[in-house]
Image (cartoon, rainbow over all chains, first blue to last red; front, side, top):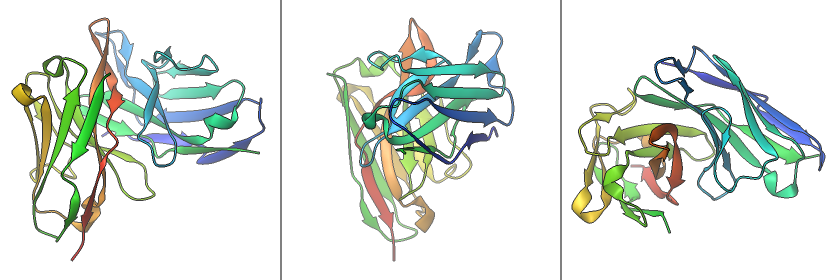
Amino acid sequence: DIVLTQSPDSLAVSLGERATINCKSSQSVSYSSHNKNFLSWYQQKPGQPPKLLIYWVSTRESGVPDRFSGSGSGTDFTLTISSLQAEDVAVYYCQQYYNTLWTFGQGTKVEIK
Amino acid sequence: QEQLVESGGGVVQPGRSLRLSCAASGFTFSNYGMHWVRQAPGKGLEWVAVIWYDGSNKYYPDSVKGRFTISRDTSKNTLFLQMNSLRAEDTAVYYCAREGRDSGWYLGGFDIWGQGTMVTVSP
């Protein structure tokens, strides 16, 4: 099974500064026949369900602010918050789909410094 | 407005069974694959089950295979999770989630989530 490992486990960033979260897959999540990488990112605030931010590595879900961006390919992926806002305090998860299995990273907690 | 509402959670003894439901509204339920995802207290997310849009395929991770069964009733726009032989490690909030689509392609991820229902397995 594919294992997703996020780093760091937590980070504290000043308001307005950049936050970067990494997600490394134990094997490639690329479907060459579909030309798709099924790698998504979610934001979860306390007491709430997760919210989809990014899918197909870099496509922002409708309504998600453009300060959130995703990048990467193969086995290494990144979620970037370009200018951290107070409302971005949350736990962020990467998630992949491959071969009828869906798996999540362990999560990264983002706080304000 | 697209919405998923779970129900059926509660406290159950180890080895017993429980059936969760998820009522869908605001979208054409029969067009979408549906999932269950769980989250143990203070822990991360774990995918539990998927059912294809037409019910033709169902998949599970090894942690629940043979104990959990996902199903759907399109006439009632409802998703189910039958959980048998429950264990303490099944204690979690259980979310139902929709497999998202964009321009006819599956996202490989979940675009709509319910609020979750808590399942506690305890003697």
